[in-house]
Image (tube, rainbow, N blue to C red; front, side, top):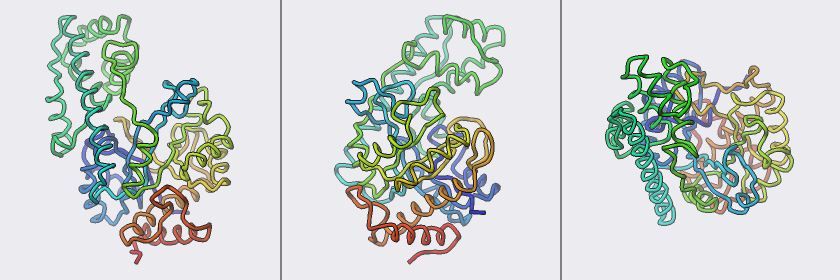
Length: 388
């Protein structure tokens, strides 16, 4: 058996199943998780809190981030990458970043632009949905400032750390609708959607999902297009922050599978061509047969693999990754643990100006024996030791 690890979760003030950063660590302790990797969008100011809480609990905290990027040539060709709804959109994550060091001028410019674009978009979406309900005679009292303050208060963080996501917006309007009596609630939603509500209007999670799909997505009253970051800017930002560019594999989490990922071998080759030497999975959206096939192929091509759970809805699921149809195989669990070890060692080495998994240009450092050393060092770190 290998120690339980999770390299991809979202924590407050990102939309999260956890109400506070401390709650993440408490859950990890209760489940015996030895390492957790945080991959928040837009702002990473909260990472100091999770680092302190994890240290106190003797859990290894690893830091990352997540971007939505755009590859124009694939968009023009209509190729879906790892976003089933938007051709050319690629989710890209960074693993093992150092969020506590000063940003380079390039990284600062990118981070500022991403945060500004997202804040403007989310605030406009709130205004549009509020206006839509208002035209139907319902004052939701949802405002951007009020929602930011509410999210900050729930997470126990400053308002400056909050950059709203679609899920926050859907939650706010779900809570507004819940103020209505049950009969009026159904009637109002039917009017707002322009067709009958399809979920249990007493189920907050189900209603948030429906509001998001019917009032915030393309073709709906609250839709505002995302300003996607260029792939190269996201890639450069990750490297400037000392991290490892990593590709989130959707695989059979989409039906049908996105064309970019349809062939595991072609996917591996495409990632290597773009300088991506790490991939991650959210196994709870995959069947074991499919997961094993992708993991083995990527590993055979020398690509580091790891796994997480996201925890980006209110659904309370275990922190230990597992497939839709059961637990991880011993093979995938071993490789995912090795991936976490490499990320832990990469982060530790960066603090000592030692070569990690990739260099500042995204190229692999040294050879297979070096990777084995990283695995051993990371195992020592996650096991509770310290590497020097």
